[in-house]
Amino acid sequence: MTTRSPLASRPLRLTVPALVGVLLLTGCGAQVDGPAAARKVTVNRCGQPVEYTTPHRAVVYEGGSADKMFALGLTGHVHGYVMPPANPPVTESPWAAEYAKVKFLGDDLLNRELVVEAKADFVVAGWRSGFSDQRGITPAILDGLKIQSFMHTESCFNYPGHPERVTPFEGLYTDLERLGKIFGVEGRARSLVDGYRKRVEAVRAQAPKDEQVPVFLYDSGTDKPFTAGSQVPPNDIIRLSGGRNVFADLDARWTEVTWEAVMKAKPEVIIILDYGDKPAQEKIQFLKEFPATSKLPAVVNDRFFILDYNEGISGPRNLDGLEKFAAYLRELDR
Image (cartoon, rainbow, N blue to C red; front, side):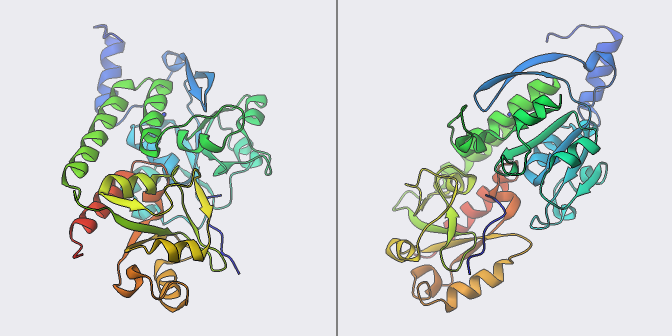
């Protein structure tokens, strides 16, 4: 029986108010209150220009959405978060202290009733990862309710009507820059993105220069494996580290393949995506016992790398996953 993954961006005026704003931005985070915060900007949402008024009561879905807001110092603009049980505990997050400052709104999938009850003025989620036609919570529906929304650029690949195509890490940078513009913290967003780009370049500079290691990401599934195509962060993590995603030719995000295709690819490393309801060790044990995978080079040589769920979905922790996996590849004895 197949197990499915839960997975289915001014000039300074030397006045007293401006000085106070600068102190807030450089102190405890980019928190802006009062009428001055009611600025309007136009930012693309999956290719569609949308006018935003600075939000003050955001609801964020899953770790990637929350992390982007927290990394930008926008905790004061977040009302609460929705965290399905598959996600690792927020106490393990680098922003655990920020999670503690906002409300936990639920451990189910994102839904319209929850957002309305929370009196949200902004919702951050991904397409098919939070927003869903089937569940009746889409940006268009929220627009009709006068609730603003923001979609992860990486997820726009699947969004009907207004597609955007960028590499997954570029999607992360785009989200930070767009959120920075919406909340008036463009400088902080630029600084974050510049720092992330430098971290990526440091990894690329150390990546093995010889033949790329074939890598298979195993998310879940027994009848058919669920894996990463070219349009999700693990593809960039593998590529930038000097590896080769054996399913990089699939123009898809998270997708099903066949065990025959995995066997033919002969991966030398298997990345295990680790999340709550399907622990990594259970997946490793399955791959060791399953006839179709037990003789793969990665399995025979016990080359498993565990990637945390929040390092694999679009968010700042992608950089942590990249650095850890790159270090793992550099230490491989091939």
